[in-house]
Each structure stands twice: as structure tokens, then as C-alpha cells.
Amino acid sequence: MSEQLDDTTEPWLAIDHVQIAIPVGGEAAAREFYAGVLGLREVPKPPVMAARGGCWFESGALRVHLGVEADFRPARKAHPALVRRGLRAFIAASGLSATWSDEIPGTVRCHIADPFGNRIELIEGP
Image 1 (tube, rainbow, N blue to C red):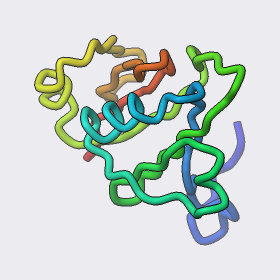
Image 2: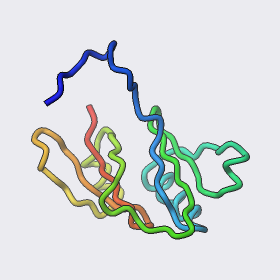
Image 3: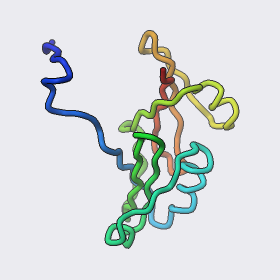
Image 4: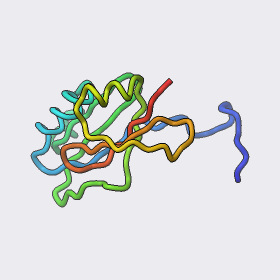
């Protein structure tokens, strides 16, 4: 097991964003899910990148970029893990189909799928 260093000596600071693949033409469904269901705010992509399709979403420090892939296949194992407060109430109110897991002691978490079949983990925050 590696030694943990204090935060002042760690060279890596954070994940700036997570990119999730979507199929060509999937932007409307992505907006409905990521903004409409999850409640993330869409932010404009830089013009040169907007020409490629896809869309970007944010909430506080959380950034999710959705990029178009012509040969799209959903990520069923690889996934982002998004942390939010009030997770159980959110899932109950959203109508999302969630698979809850107690595999990590002391962590409230579940997995959902976006409209394209990509796996997303949701974790209860402080």
C-alpha cells in the first residue's frame, strides 16, 4: 500500500471534467436527462468545439462534457461517480431506476443509466 501524502505535497489537484460519449444526434435527449432530470446547467462550448456536436453541463465544481461518437457504444462498466446531497430523496422524486449498493461500508450510493445506456454512479455527499 502506498503512503498517503498531505494535500500540500500532492501534485494532482482534481478532475477538471468527465467526458461521456453519446451517439450522433443525441443532444436533445442528453439535455432532457442531464439538465431536465439531473438538474445540471448547460454551458456553452467554445465555438470551435461546438461544431463537433455534444454539450457541456455544470453544477458548482462538477463538470460533465458529452461528446459525440459516430461508432457509439454505451459505457456499461466505466463510469463517472457524481456526488450530491439528498441522494435518496432525489432518486425517489426523479423516478429514475437506481440500483443501490452497500459494497463500500459507510457510503450511500447507487447506479443509474443515462438515456444512451451509459452507467453513472451517484454518491450521497456531506
